[in-house]
View 1 (cartoon, rainbow, N blue to C red):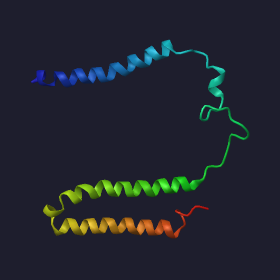
View 2: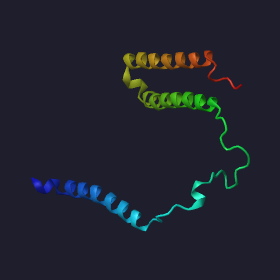
View 3: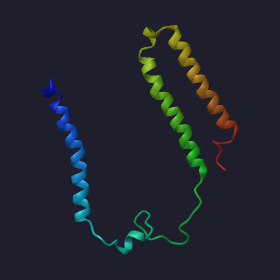
View 4: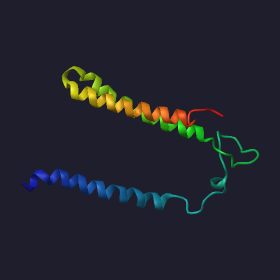
Length: 118
């Protein structure tokens, strides 16, 4: 019976030892003193001109959140649509509730002005 688990044990040992070896080798090979250019700001290969601390527009973040919500909806909606005929009425009602919750969330985000670009 132990022979059946020998492969799992070998993979476990490799999974533990390999990262330790890689980290040890990288700590030996890496430069010990950080170069001056490591602390400089870098953007698109050009030297920074003017103030480097700029305000980030939060609308990008809000758009990203709404996109992720509807992307997840699509991920759940696709397999449901593929098996729609074999799932029955209960699955249809569940998906209707799911879409209704997302529409309410979208309406709330719209009402609060999260999607407006000022």
